[in-house]
Length: 86
Image 1 (cartoon, rainbow, N blue to C red):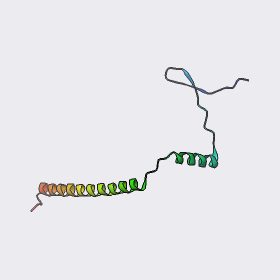
Image 2 (cartoon, rainbow, N blue to C red):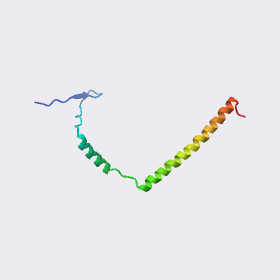
Image 3 (spheres, helix red, strand yellow):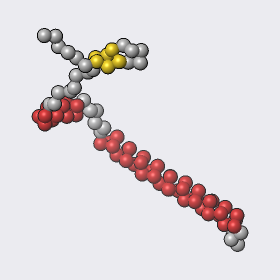
Image 4 (cartoon, rainbow, N blue to C red):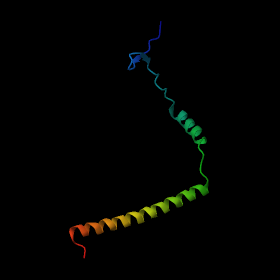
């Protein structure tokens, strides 16, 4: 007996086979996949991690100063517009 497969049509009207659903692997297969993918990761060194953390804190500080100054300028401009400066 011939095996029937579901087919879909693309925009041009050609029939395309429907891909087979993924088979379930279970928890053990998932764990194996996680271990295999984790072994492919290039982990940063302690020095790289430390430098990246320091750079993040520096950028946060710079952005804090920038937004503080921008807020002061906007506050001054608002007070000047409504005539409350003085």
